[in-house]
Image 1 (cartoon, rainbow, N blue to C red):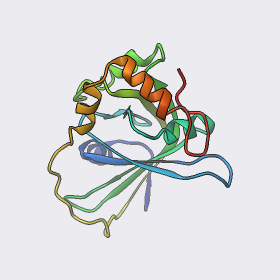
Image 2 (image 1 turned 120 degrees about the horizontal axis):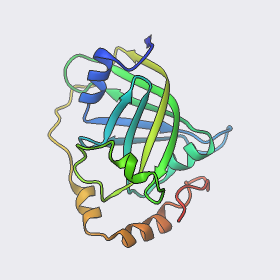
Image 3 (image 1 turned 180 degrees about the vertical axis):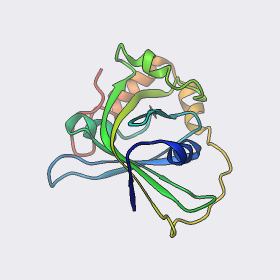
Length: 184
């Protein structure tokens, strides 16, 4: 493993080229569930500068990341090379969620000009990165990328803003550990 001062050069190029990444968060203290979520879709992750990144958080059945970030802010993003030379990059930091209902959301949404569709985005997650590392990734399998799935975009495209708000109210108000997540 090697530590880096910032997300620059080959690290930035690697991160921006990956079609998939993983988000890890956990509640404070010894109890509760650690959460790891796969994320993807081209245009939904951006490097804002050498120590800041952001991604679009689309509607889903869970709200663990949102709840954990509200409680303690800790987050790690991991990228794996499934094609080409082996590599794993981890970005450790402090995250915050800007939900669709926040007045700042439209400005944050503008950070993603290449996103395929933003109607289904329930939030933007911004991360201040304080630790950047990469490691070999020798045991990560080689896999072929065939393209992004459009299932989530089609699902949200069939729903109005009110439908999506009702979905958040039904499925995203608390984490599996009962921590508050999306409100309103």
